[in-house]
Length: 119
Image (tube, rainbow, N blue to C red; front, side):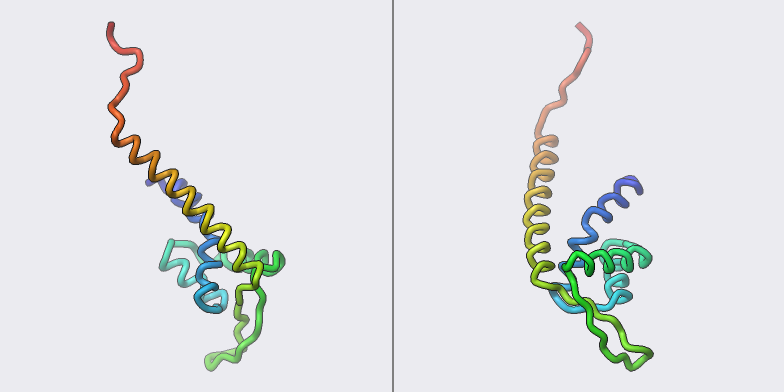
């Protein structure tokens, strides 16, 4: 797979992945970024603007929690709107990936068609 395609795919699923992670448990930005890096190879720099945007959009809310290793950490928690957005995105993702899988499966079954071949 080309690197540019992989980058575009990662960008396309980033919001949904963050919402899904927060649906399981609250998290702070560095932890979310680390899990994204492990899971889909996203860099840390993309998470902070994304979290600010999600907060501005009302998808997440924040709270501070004391940390044993430094200053309090800002945790992100999914809101009701965030849960609804995740449900909608999951439905769209499932329909989309199902359609793509069908197209790819059909392409494997089709016999090659020669265009402009010899007469």
